[in-house]
Length: 266
Length: 241
Figure 1 (cartoon, rainbow over the protein chains, first blue to last red):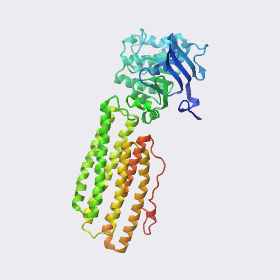
Figure 2 (figure 1 turned 45 degrees about the vertical axis):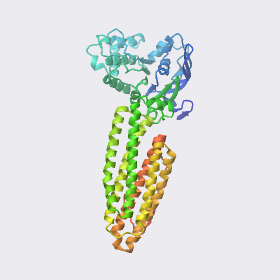
Figure 3 (figure 1 turned 90 degrees about the vertical axis):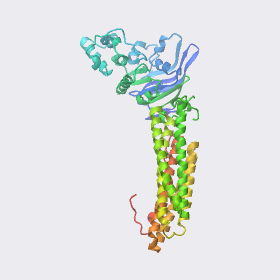
Figure 4 (figure 1 turned 135 degrees about the vertical axis):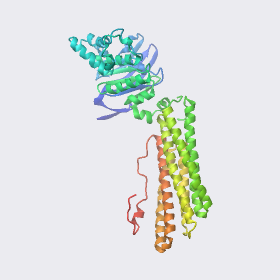
């Protein structure tokens, strides 16, 4: 069952692959931002993307739910397969794709609406609820999944923007899971949060991996080490190394990875 | 991985703990040498110095453990840096044990100095201790040079120490059978030989750490051992270690 793909420098269980990237290139105009990335991202696993600023980790993350489509000069080549289907195929609706592949951003960005409507928005536009009772149920379930239900259940009509930073971020995670996604992409979800809120979000990520494939971009190596099972190290647009997180942090193969994670000038 | 860290203090901290373990290693090498010399020359003053010197070795181990704990808490080292801290702690523990064995040899030396010498014993023990001392020196050297090949070589040399111990074991047994008045001295000498044999095991463990530090993997192959032959000596019942 285990197949060792030399090109990926990693052996993974083929049955468990959620995203499969093959020879992916991303260009911003003339700038070749992602070079020949091949990687298999696993289901029900937290995968961390680490690397110095400008290494392409966020660019690659954004290509997984076609967020790069919104940048006119951006061009993506190669195959990105979600459950074996090419996400860049002409018949794929990016809105439907993003319901399946949710995203949480660096800065909490709740809609300027009530807490309830923040969660209900996605299920409404995707027609996931037939009536108010079903919608209520989705809102409660999502807020519980976001580990914020107990803090907001008595004030669902209050504006989402009135919550603390850490609560807003968990609200955004709850909003992302409301559309029943299969993958959650997180772009530095804790960089604007204090250590307590960070710990709560990390605990949440750990719970979410039972249901989803979670991909997290983080500048905190300690966070990558704490929350992920797989780690990918990007450098100058290349995927340098992809392996079990414990291997990356105790015995990485590539000297560039080692230089980066040990805080050396590489 | 000789590039400096962006945080220069991190480099200084890592260098400091390694310098301490090397200093400790130097003291332990000296303790082995001096203990064996005091046995051979029946020099109780020298033996007493070895006993006193062990305190310094113990203090160094405490200092190393404290500094390693601080480094782990403050720097959260990864990869080679993490392995450096882990191996420094382990090696300090091994060195401390070797120091204790040297101290024990010195203690027995003082007792033995009041007894009739056993012919050839102290020379044989000195040869054995010299081999262990050389192994320790090479192991520490290979640690600083991150040289797994030398580490592997040290592991294999422990076989010679085991064989020397087994030869001495038989010799002492013979002496004791020949003349029961030799028993007390031979028992002490046997414990000394056993102590040196155990030192060799700790040096082997240091060599394992060198290999782990340089390669990220512990050696998994079985190194050659000679711990069976003494069990074949007549009249010797196998005992649980």
